[in-house]
Image (cartoon, rainbow over all chains, first blue to last red):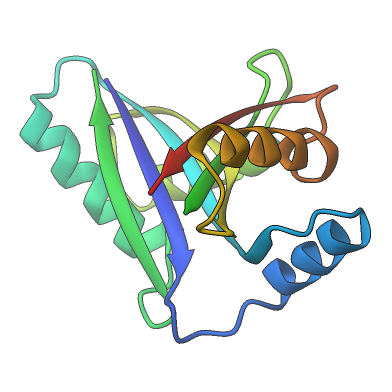
Length: 81
Length: 81
C-alpha cells in the first residue's frame, strides 16, 4: 500500500523559491503564468497487510511529525492501493 | 486555472534524502514503512483565459524545461480549474 503526502507552504507564508522559479520562467518567455509555489511530495510504501484506515493514520502521523512543519506548512495525505 | 506538477526521481535513481527520512521515521518507532521517496511538487497559477489544453501544454513545457531534470526525473502534470 502506498501513501502520497503533499506538503505546501501555507498561503500566508512567503515562498522565495517559488518566486525565483516564477522569475526564471518569465525570463524564458512564458507570459501566462501568474504565480508558482513550490512544495514537497513524498511517496511512502507501507506494509501491504495494513488496512486503508491504519495506513492513513500512520501516514498522517508521519506527515505531521516528520515531513511537514505544521507552523508554516499544510499537508495532505492520499492513500493509493 | 491551476496546474499541479509532481516531479519524482526515476525508480532506478538512488534517493539518499528519502533513505534518510526512512531511517528517521524508523528511529521514531514506525515499523510498517518499507520505503520513502522524496519528490517535488509545484502549483502553477495560469492565466484563467487559457483553455485547458493550452494550460496543459504550457505546464508540460515548463515542467520539462525548468522544473524537472528529464535525465533522472519523471514528471506528471494535472490541471485543476
